[in-house]
Amino acid sequence: MAATAEFQYQYTLSDHLGNVRLTFTGENEDGLIDTNPTAGEILQEDQFYPFGLRLGGLSFSSGVANRYRFQGHELQDELGLNTYSTFFREYDPTIGRWMQIDPKVREFESPYVGMANNPMLYLDILGDTNTYYFDANGEYTGRWEEDDGPHRGVWERADGSTITFVFGDQENDHKNLFNLADYGGKLNLKKKSEKWYKVQLQDDSEVKRRLDNAGVFEEENRNRSLSYIEKQHSGGRLDFRFWMEDIIEGIHLVVGTPEGSYGFSKANYGNFLIGAGYAVLTDGLAGEYTTRTLAHLFSIFNDEYWRDSPDDQLAISLGFEYYKANYTTIVEKEYYRSRSGSKTRTFTRVVKPSLIQKKRP
Image 1 (cartoon, rainbow, N blue to C red):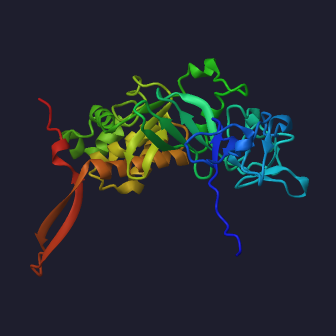
Image 2 (image 1 turned 135 degrees about the vertical axis):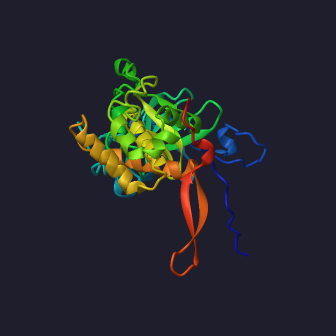
Image 3 (image 1 turned 180 degrees about the horizontal axis):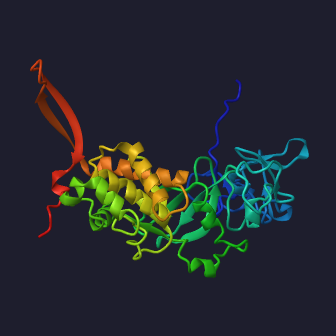
């Protein structure tokens, strides 16, 4: 009779960087790893130089070798190349360099550099730098991973939960973080004192408190919304730059937007509040485009000498969407046309009546 082929379950142990260090199987199914070479449970052990070259004298394999090794990448040993294959490009552990340029080249750094020359701290999962990690205190750890998609952060909080957020300024926010870390794997303490390294949660109550301070829920201001915006935009209650002195520079995380969680710089958090505040004042009648245009024009005609950048406009748009999701209700109205007498129903989005503040005595 022909022999029946059987699958063998194999397991791996990896270190903190995802390097596969041990491949084994549970032959006797006792839940333990028998390290006796004759037991046949240890199939492969891998030790690496820092940039991924295998230490031959301390590594071994028996049978069919597991080719997923350094950072979990697959070793390409055809034709004796011995390179690692990732999603975007090939990595040569002998020289610690990529064989193709970085899809997202960083200023002042070779596009062939691997793991920012610090493989003991940084990862390079797909070959495209994106994800930055923050600890339970909200402080940037100096650790980032290669990934696809937009630049984003991961906040691993003290309660065990994780918040993943997108940087509001895809051009600059991640650079401010990246520049904090030197190539020794430590944060620059001088720059760290500038507080740019820290994530601060701005929840619904905090957003509403700042909008309350700006007077956007006061009925008197809403009744003269455009005049109020014109007078208060620069240096007044709607100029959030002057009303956020209680918070430090850093990444201000807003989790309630319909588009997901976003991390803003202090300046763009102010733009986010402008978008929400203008929408509240006008009952959203101005619309998202007009809200962005108003903010843009008031920036030009007041004391600003520059126009709003794309990240400014994105923050304002997200503020407008936040207004729609959190501060509005749909009101159905009926009215009669003057000639035909036919009844028509309309549906209007307005600020929730419970939020509107009457004129203070």
